[in-house]
Image (cartoon, rainbow, N blue to C red; front, top):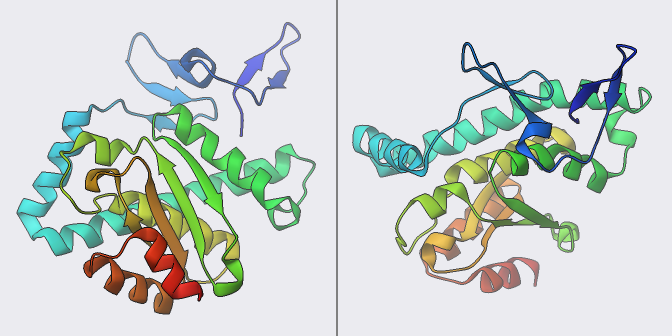
Length: 221
């Protein structure tokens, strides 16, 4: 996945290092339509829009249902995005299957467009994989930074995104939960990905007020 420029001969030249909006987005001045380098249509939104969306959803269906809706929205986004990402990447890199590529290379190639779009940076950790756990640290969460410091996790959309991503890559159902959030006063949001049993246990510890390190310690001991 990379921006595409056209050389003088009319052939497409693939670039993988793009840091400026001009490298990644194309805007039609007549219609105002914004598209990514791969042709996907985008829309520019403000922090006020994000905050209003979250508050409005909770007001309409209740906070618990809103959490589930936002989580499932993230899951669906990841799964739908993978339908385009996987075949495009396999084609670009010599028809090599995604499962045969280095996992970290796949993850960074997938996430970089989201960073470019303003969804923040990330770091993932497989150190507890033997215990059935993957952790993801998220920096500059759009959702958490759009809200006040509420003293509780709020990044349900991101949790769903990571759950959907690793469900696709592992070919088995995985879920995700935020165990540390910027909205709770932390500098970094942290998520835990795993099977239902692990996630349910983590949810209990989150409700009990345990820290991320305590939760991971309890589940990997």
